[in-house]
Length: 445
Image (cartoon, rainbow, N blue to C red; front, side, top):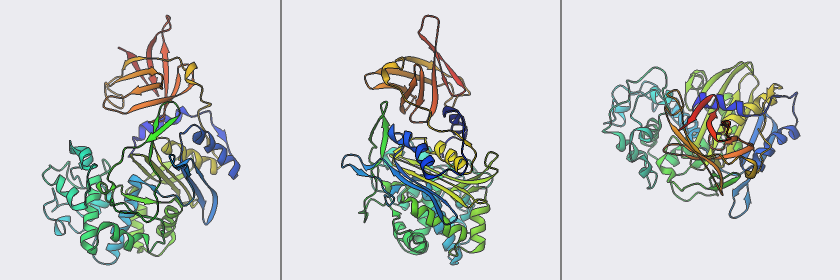
């Protein structure tokens, strides 16, 4: 999940609010165009109210090398949005009487840390307290380099101590908890996870272009993933074994299929009333969370995903029966900032658009230096390094990433990776003395 404070702060990097009244497709298209033209968005957008499509468009390329454009039927890896589908599979098994919310995981998968205390409900609400492969294994990146199964991933955490007792508020996205849920789905269906998801979710919901990537052949092509590079560029994302993310990030789908799933959950009959209530009435769990939006005047269901080469975002406003779905084959943090603004636009509220226009690297000021932030920074007491070279201006975070900066003027930038505003502060002699990253200031060392 993305850092909520970072996302909220980064909204300040967008331009002054504009007001929209019942926007048409042309206005929404105008919102997305500068993101796409500057290589800061590539993917598919779908906005639906009730059964009426308000906007549907695709931008950029599904495969830049082969010049294959993204289209309405392009499939994208969706990273953590996969948890919505995994949760749905578990709820379907509960409705079939093969599981219950109170089933203890040790009854199905022995030897899991604290397994006698952790229930299916804990896995769904992501408050199990299981150790997490992504965060707690020093060699997690090695897992991504080889084929995995739910069994192998659960085995990887068996000897780790629990992070905390199960229950209470969810403290983090529990990747290993979802790996365990995938293994439970396998054992209760007698099918490999990909096939089980087809039987429980994709086929009954009518999601014809969705599946689970377990490193086998996929019937139809999935978009290639990219990462930001340089001032305006993109580069292919490093290849990973998607089988290393069962339950928490291995699904692929289309924007239309996400909407089909959403309609099936909210208005369909494929879940029991009790399961539907559990998914819709839990504040934080099942793959999404609810946020009370003062600006929009109602609570919003939010799901977010990010993995090498891909990012995704779903926001659903139940009072308006309005869904905004954005699937992208660029990995960065622009989506979580774009989608709330689009929702505000559609609701006739003030919204913020692209921060541009971008300027050439030649007028950027070419700043450089090491800048030390305080203990309250996102990475406490971190030193960030500004580098200007032939490729543009880069902000190097300790341990990564090397975030390329998009120049908006002399000493004004957007961090293309985290999509936050960066301002260089110069002294009387014209040399950089500090940088402002959102509300935080780092002094030159």
